[in-house]
Length: 259
Image (cartoon, rainbow, N blue to C red):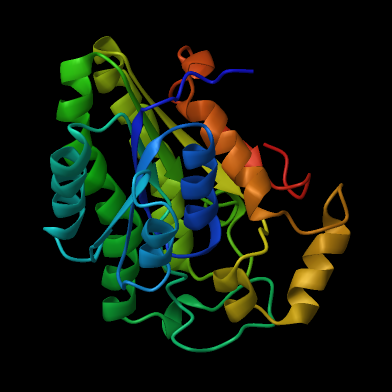
């Protein structure tokens, strides 16, 4: 099936690894020209080096109020506009270098105000500012796709995450619905994808294997998800075929949680 993405321009945050990198590669496979951004050059420069005509990279800190808009400006300058925004950049928040065995996560008393601000600035405000900067360029074309990466933690709590991470991901759902209403008349869709346990460096680095094994056994599919499976959903939402899907929350969790 032709997804109608040939020569569309996509910006993917958090593209150096994990879900973001998988989304960047999947969109490029469908013909998109892709800008990958992350807080460091590792990973995103390798994408560009592998296919400089198709990829461009830019370092941007989502916690910096100017970082997301700078990434959008780079995208517009490099490729002449932006059609697809995938907000995959994020941090686990409460980890602070630790590995958690407890599925229920850490208590609120263990989260400092600095932890809270950092997590919400990266996961929530960073996504908002990226969308805020990208939507005017999309509106000029009368076509656009904004795809936010939430989490099952934002739906049910726990999952090894603290309240800071869960709150940041839950808020993305409300943001998607609000933006869908205001951006829709300009031909722009805004959706939120909620992954469960997807096998990524961030997940494996912040969870004891006993926890991930337990969750895998509790899913209907009896396994962790793969980043390519989530990227396939993101690519579909970016396509011409998804023109009438907006304000939606799509769960990719292998049957761990049913809403």
